[in-house]
Length: 260
Image 1: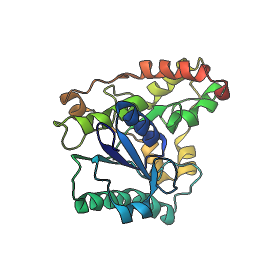
Image 2: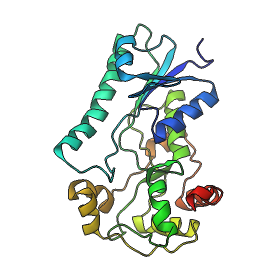
Image 3: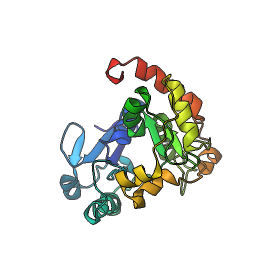
């Protein structure tokens, strides 16, 4: 039997953002079906999904699947670039085709693209930065003057739910916090939250060596992005500035000894 609010199908629902979104949706009263490469509870594989299609009770479809572009253990080869492309384009295509062939159309289709750096203890950039910052080796990337679009995990989840539930949300919604900061300002706030210095820079040449210059630009150049549509449609950010977000991380990190 479907949940009171219907079923939300989440492509890529087992990743960092997907897991948080699925948990929040279930808490609100939705049934959630995650489409993943591996089977499991409340999951369906992509191959099974292509055969079975959407459940009749589906009220919304969310596409979150995608290879992590900044995965430091993956070399920036032509093969990896093709994987990045396929993991985003093909999975979104599968979901769109399922909607097209469904006898009962869902009300909403949300596809993730262009989200800022998502900050949360269970994954993303914060998990990679905890150790170097805690050891006193944290600092800005490159010059540190580049803009750094960012958003707290609770707010990116909130924006997805906002897009699902609010009829006035149409078109592109930038998944970023309203405060525009530089990479240096982020490093300073994160260092203060961990009670550690934040002045050891990661030089541009080191970023390019580790990630390749083509994708290293994501970190060394940055861009200014604002959540205009989110604010205009009535979304209220839980963490609108980096100081409030960093303080929340400090409480969580110091409460969990595995990160210390």
